[in-house]
Image (cartoon, rainbow, N blue to C red; front, top):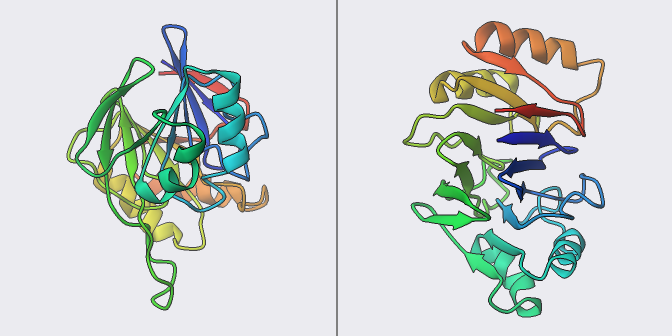
Length: 210
């Protein structure tokens, strides 16, 4: 499986000539979802869900489809009948040849005064886990954790403890658009030194084979 990091929380997975894209939001490239055979969306926040990017992907590929939670599906399903699938915690499905399990139900707490929205994470091929905006721990082993490294709802101690709890073979940063280059070495050193697993990051457009 080939994993390509796009800007912020978006990743592309390629296998057997097919492409799965997760969270092509407004902080990601305009063409982040183009070429996808399937798109997964974790929640409705605009840095993860951008309707224009999804429409472009589905219009470019009449066979492409989306799997997401109800709050997102309700906003785009009318335009693409039968191609937007609503899923939730505990569901399993096949998308573009990838086997996907759904884990989690709620977005992390931003502030007690802000109501929590729904959020789901996706475990792809029993190997790569993208949690969206939550520190969800799947009840399955994780080879590669897409790690939300910096967000308004988290602090670095929580990120480190999350890596320790999931115990992946490797953690690769996502949710990093707000993290400045000046701060990156601090995060790299502390997560790498304290997380207990191989920790790395990819620049947007960089890829690795899993």
